[in-house]
Length: 118
Image (cartoon, rainbow, N blue to C red; front, side):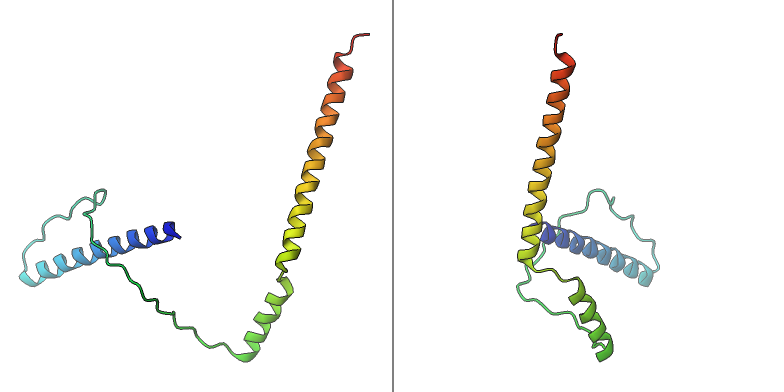
């Protein structure tokens, strides 16, 4: 979760930098004077970012009942129980282990017969 927070803070700093540039452009256009060159983008100035503790839910558009029913049917068709998924993963691990042991045994047998002195 900290990676997501860091990315969101970086995006906020970029937006703040863009807003500052827009303010400079607007001020320059209002005064009819040339604007000073912007700072290089490779070294942005540090921006103090306040911590937001409240969350706001994004508005969700209501779906038509038939569309919602179709979406639920599709989701239910592909839904897998967590216990089933865990069992499948465990079986897969055992299968890969058995295949690796079989391959190792075959290689050892090939080396034995290839290097055996008559």
